[in-house]
Amino acid sequence: MFDPYEVRRDFPILSLMVNGKKLVYLDNAATSQRPVQVIEAIRNFYLKYNANIHRGMHALSQEASRLYEEAHDTVAGFIGAESTEETVFVRNTTEAISLVAYAWGLRNLEKGDEVVVTIMEHHSNLLPWFKVAELTGARVKVVDINDSGFLNYEALGEAITEKTKLIAVSHVSNVTGVVNDVGRIVRAARSVGAKVLLDGAQSVPHMPVNVRELSVDFLAFSGHKMLGPTGIGVLYASKDALEEMSSFIVGGGSVKAVHYDASTGKLRVEWLKSPWRFEAGTPNIAGGVGLAEAIRYLERLGLNNIWSHERMLVQYFFKRIKEEGLSGEINVAGPSSAERRGGIVSFTLGKMDPHATALLLGEDGIAVRSGFLCAQPLLERLGFSRGAVRASFYLYNTREEVDMLVNAVKRLTMRQFRGE
Ligand SMILES: Cc1ncc(COP(=O)(O)O)c(C=O)c1O
Image (cartoon, rainbow, N blue to C red; front, side, top):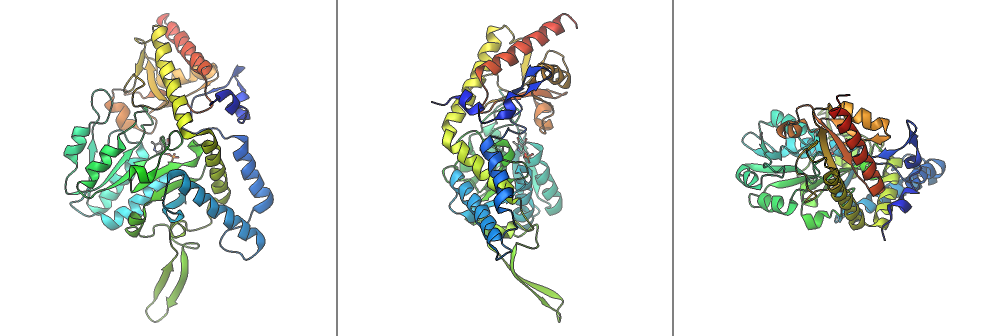
């Protein structure tokens, strides 16, 4: 039985008092908290194994290299990648997507080609494509949502043509929590031979994600949103996709040999194979070790259990809002049902400014995010011209915490009604 109260014992930070109130941490889509097991793995690495990797013959360097390589194996197993070669460690989702944009996009896109994205994208899956389009002459097409807040699959079908080279799409929206139908998107892409990049920042931490089952070419995600440390993220690139990528950030650690020919003034470079080819410079070794520990923790609990728990919480939230008669006071961004969505709800209360709402919720110890959530085009499309407040649930959140959020929302709407 999945028990969030038992899980919470591994997260001492959740027992903090904030402003004299018990902390209710509902900002998990921004970053999750870390369990003691992950903190201990990082501490242990620095206490017992710290050295640079792939550069030393001495015992510590060998041990650090082994741990860092094993972390890649753990990630590969977690997402169902065929081999370690396909899992490149980067800093975060943003860097993973930009790596595809530059290492794959600059080499494979040209004038006349098209990249298809959606209005649901986080800025990190929007800006790189416009930037690369500027550099290559390719065009970016942005697919709309329908009136219910789900992706408009008919519009997607129309946007995809023989010119489409890549579809870059989020798996789960960081604003509405909507889960996109990856199978349908991949089938549409394959019909014209286009590649698919899946932004898994809000899916990989919460539900089982298997790259072979989904059949995507690229998957990007961040360690810090899945109980791991900041500064470590992953780009999965399939073997076929890797063959189409050139190096982007280059230097030490990415090459087998470099020869300088003084007569021609040229370098002859033998690149290492992936992932090292794409991980030039000293990487975040302790971050990799911490991420592997986070994955072991998530796997012990079971991603299916975590997903069911979060879906139960969001369902409970909507039920409580209805019971309290708050449906008319709360404007939910996107669908206000628990269908085809994860544990993310963004909203505004009447005419209240989202930052002011978040500040007042903070006074009650409730940590939420507010503003444009790095997805301004989506919020503007949904009519949230001043942004929204976002509550995002994770494995350690409880129904009592949802009650505290709903009660605080109720108090705020009453205050507003009284004109305070
Ligand atoms: C859907 C989505 N994509 C990308 C990102 C960027 O993640 P990071 O800041 O870890 O690079 C986020 C983070 O909020 C996200 O929610």
